[in-house]
Length: 137
Image (cartoon, rainbow, N blue to C red):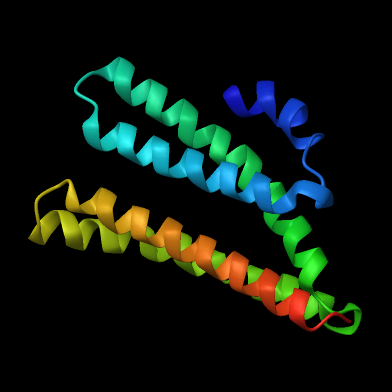
């Protein structure tokens, strides 16, 4: 319901001009949502953390396609979008990795792992942007 209510309102504001700021905002919302999950002691806390995390998703998903469109050379754009689908591999491995962490470490380590993946993803976004900036087409 939150996605339906906010997707258009937020999505129409995302632009190439402020794409890096939008990505930082979205990734920050992911991190805040994870922190909320890790620290929450009530159902209301989990609901609020989920809402914050969901707003991050509403920002990051359209922004990542705009980002790919920005960095991909015209003749390789299809290949870049195809490579983006490797994120489905991460979606499949996520539950496996979380299960392994939950089975072998205290539960809060799962949030550390997920946070590390968010930071790592952000680093890759900005490496791609800096490479494109130093080698314009």
